[in-house]
Amino acid sequence: MALSSRAIALRSVLLAGAIVALVEIVGGGFSLATAIGAGLSVPAALLLFRDRRMPGRQVPVGGVKPPSASFVSPAVLLAALPDPVVLIDRRGVVLNVNPAARALFPLLVEARPLAFIVRAPAVLDGIETVLRGGEAVQAEFREHGVVERTLEAHIAPLVSRADALPEGAVLMIRDLTTARRLEHMRVDFVANASHELRTPLASLIGFIETLQGPARNDANARERFLVIMRDQARRMSRLIDDLLSLSRIEMSLHMLPDDTVEVGLLVRHMIETLAPLAQERGVTLALEQAPVPLFVTGARDELLRVVENLVENAIKYGQKGRRVDVSVMTARASAGEEVAIEVRDYGPGVAPEHLPRLTERFYRADVADSREKGGTGLGLAIVKHIVNRHRGRLDIASKVGEGATFKVSLPRIAPPGGTA
Image (cartoon, rainbow, N blue to C red; front, side, top):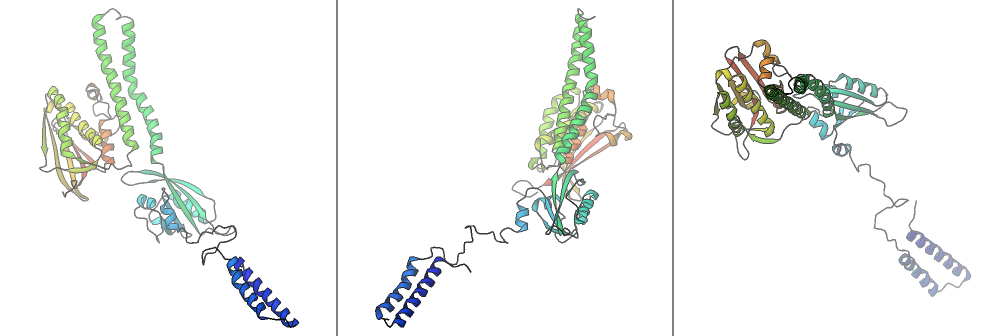
């Protein structure tokens, strides 16, 4: 038992006093002065060897207080981690889930088997391997939801003794969606750009060589070729802009926008912007709006791009109908009320076999007509990706000879500071 300096001094004084008193008694010389001196030595020792530490406080060897076993609980530790983390026992039952993991898997709760929620074979096989005594493993898998995510799980055993089987496992999950989309973006950009840019580049090279050779002194040919070269260069510029826009949208496809947008105001602004193009093509634009403002959660610039592409396509490809109707209304849906943006033209329409593929990259129902009108084949692909990012729907209906209708449906929200 460790004693303080005060206790040691007190015991020493008492022992010394007892020895002196015994000697005095044996020698027959014990007096009142001796007794008083022995008595005063006790408070003197207590005063001189006073313990300056706080009452009840114990300082271990080295002066450092060991951390308490309850200093940080597993739940507090996991909550501080930014990445999703899940603890499971040796049966695969969830013990603890941090907020990041709960946001990734909303149905994930404690005391239920992880396999009920995460059904990726690679992850379940990795857990089984680890719980049987294997080393830590990594498993890449995809989570299918409104937007598909690519994830990677690092599964490590929880072992209390080196010679025992794991008592559980910890899963640390990383989101690889952005990295994988970057890889696909690079591959797609090279493939698509090389394919689509080949024709205008070949045209430009041919005209340049002609102007340098046979048409060097032909003023009429030079003027005609320069106009074609300008159009081809503009087409390449539009193509590159659309490819970059599509890549940026795909990069953020898994991230929900968080701004509040008034749809009617946005559509009216785009109608006014495209009015000169409609007038030039001899097309009348008609806008019908709901009597009250309609709001959605979204990115304003991206939603402007959606309306621009749909209305511009209707003006260009439905030109023979001489009319484009645009409406912004509410619609009922199973998940609640929606805001519907509908664009209809009265042109030649689209054959049924083309409808399912209209939103594919570079797909054109009429390649010659599309290129003649300056189309890149990416407009509807951009619309589809933006609508998906906003958790909406794009519906296309058309009959040959009766025009086409493009309808975008987005979840409606209450107006700021009020109720819908």
